[in-house]
Length: 116
Image (spheres, rainbow, N blue to C red):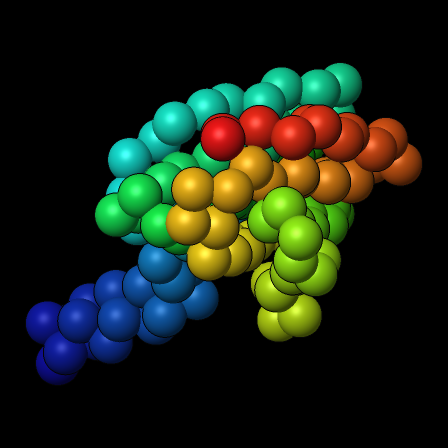
C-alpha cells in the first residue's frame, strides 16, 4: 500500500512538472551557422543548408519578450513563419543575397543585404 502511494505521488509530481525545454532549443535550423546578428533586444542566428537555403531564428534577450522575423532573398518576397513568428524561417536563396528583418521588445533590426 505504501509503495503504491509513493509511486502514485511521484507520477503525479512528474506530470505537473513536465519536461522543461528552452525556447532556443525548440526552434532551430538545419545546416551550418554562418552568421550571428546581435542587436539591443535579441540575437538572430543565420544558417545555410546545402548552399541554397538560408534559415534564421530569432532569440530574444528575455524569455517574456516576443519577436518576429522575416527573410527576403534578392528579387523575392518577404517570407515569415505564420505559426512561429520568431522562426525558424527558411528561404531558397541560391547564390543571391538575403535581407533579414527582426523585431523584439519594440526594437527593429535590419541586416542589409548579406550572404552573397
